[in-house]
Image: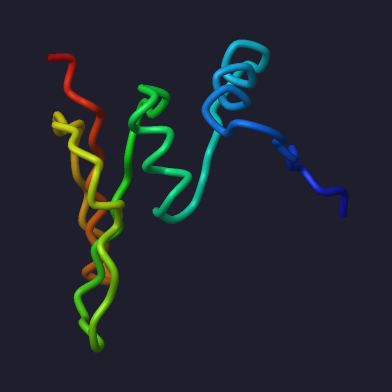
Length: 94
């Protein structure tokens, strides 16, 4: 099976901004952390999806770095038979 990915080099925000201009369709990243925080700060995130599972184990990390401060608007939610709920958000326009 061919690999359907693109290796980005250099500054992440610059590389993703270039990809968004060059490509049609969605760019998807999984997880949170430094990359997601960088893209949020650069205004390159169109939608965030949080999958909330009805179970807790131990402790975990915050989804974003402490310096990220962004307001969001709700786009919708869906709860599945498993109890998992999908929450969809976009960065607020103001």
